[in-house]
Image (cartoon, rainbow, N blue to C red):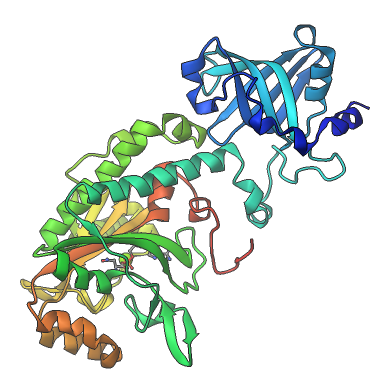
Length: 461
Ligand code: 4AD
Ligand code: MG
């Protein structure tokens, strides 16, 4: 019966949102400022346990999760019955006194005095995601609800900080944000992963990277960056690939590969520091080994491609790698994992064979078969999180490379103009936000790093 009695009490017109007579509204993450006070929390019922005359509802409000205590003897009968009847994910407005508790994840509990439901989830259609284990497919199918779980919410908060810190770094170091187009007439990162669409009868493509466009704005403004969604029709099903992901890309006129590497390490270190400053609780929620993040400091170790190959060769001979790495080939995932596991910081591998890299990379003057490029591999097997390079600044060479790569020169005339008019050495890189979030949060798969992951097999919800 309590459920039915309760249902009658739920009506929108009363609007608990505007009840000004109640205790001050607080958020779970800010309860330290309210210790000992009676506050109002607006959120949802995450879970509830009971033990005879005691109820332990867990509330969440978007900023955190807190356990409430409801002893039958301490509250009016109707309040006890109302809490008891709450179903998972019902929306609630809770009033109670904040009490410090060292064992609680947030450091606090709340002695509940009253609970009003805003919307009671009917028992006939319970919330589909219960606190028990669910398969990944089921969770991805219900991603619109899965984001409510404390772990997913913690990841999304950390993601937001990583995005903010990344922009903050450039905004405070003299960079101007310039936004490249999403709809483009040509490929930047190879023609095999292009999403093609019909642009009023002509082919167009979703951007793979803003790089070519910000090379143009770098010639106008000196130091620039872009930040936005990028797209790759990746046919691979790996834990590192999405078809839609966010990339932040700096580009700097008169900067060489050395400057690019210094920028990358300073930038990454800044981001990690910001997350450590702001997200101790969230990092605990996701189970991150925080000491590993605290070890991230400049300078990062550097290896040339040749040195990295030699390291893999030795590892194979010592039986530490199953498949030998072929000199000249790109590194596979086990190769990257092995290399990164040798260091406690991100490792920068530079000067890859030009043949396996993009058309626009400047050749190494010491060895023209190598490109002046760098990949930054995150520690603990997270693989490449940054890819960057010094760009070709000679008109003749760039034109030759465009032709060699069978790219349509006409679509690149504007890009060649940058080498016709006041060309200078310049460099930049791109960091995939999702790879960075996966590493910083210590996640198995990039699908948890973005609110709605787009992968080979999924575009719902
Ligand atoms: O190494 P990439 O392909 O480099 C570029 O796009 C350059 N144009 C960037 C530049 O120099 N301005 O991609 C850069 C980064 C990778 O290191 C990785 O973090 C991420 O973008 N990335 C992906 N993330 C998720 N899913 C994918 N399919 C990704 N492809 C690249
Ligand atoms: Mg790359």
